[in-house]
Image (cartoon, rainbow, N blue to C red; front, side):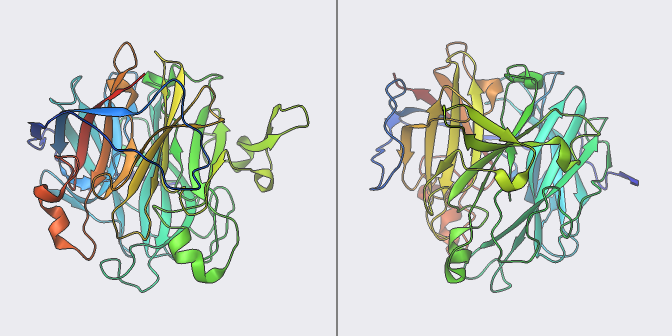
Length: 407
């Protein structure tokens, strides 16, 4: 493996955030027919306080809370300060940055840089699972294909490819060592022909707090969305970067030697005859922790330590270009069973990559911040305008909205 210096830097060039206060509101959260999750008896919806903040002009923010107190996150397809990045084409690159500050309303995005990653035989290569643990930053990427060859027209990146593997940095992103895995030889050995379904195509690390302090067993958990083989004609709309059928889970003890070694992972494999959860080193044995046909798209999970609850954010991207629906589930265990906290139809209106940074959960666990990007506006330029956003403050960038969990 060859050490690569980061290409460009804008350290200290923090974007000036947009901030605001809108009217508090309850979200009308009636789920559609067929929702497989029963209502939570403990968490009965969310209330938006109206406080929000927006940073940068890039998307794909998944922060990891490191032992130095900072958040470290990927980003792409846009700009941070004067630095631009695109994950499209043979010269695809993914960005990374440090998020400094203890208040979501007063953050600084610094140390932004990019790193190249060829997606061949796919058309794009995007950030996903990102974890900083014991001073080492592990950064994963996955592949995408656009069925008509133009991500700005028609459906948007409507074919999900495999998760590739992890590059890593021992100096918080100043230099990186690339993954030995490639899009043609990915970490989990999933299909590499565009259009074939995958199960861990865009995994994200479960957020266990600062330096993974609340992991139940010292392991890092990866959660991803996927699908099983079905009618090929339905594949582009049924498994994309934002749509899917099932949610899957893997775990590994994080180390430089283990992260790119598929034999070091265990995969949730269902339950035995006595209801005991099974974990297998054989990827073929993987089973979903949750499924909802064509409604289980991009997924993230955070452990809410004060409430001793796992919160799972799932987005149903519908057609990949329309308004998106986001719902939040809760469970006492990382594998479920899952109960519905809220179903937010047309959240954003087009919010995606929704996650809950554990750093900003209140001491009582009731107040937290949703982080996401929104309104990339494929086929509808008006969605970039603020008057179209719902809730106010949703736009193309790193968006944060304060919410309160109703008891």
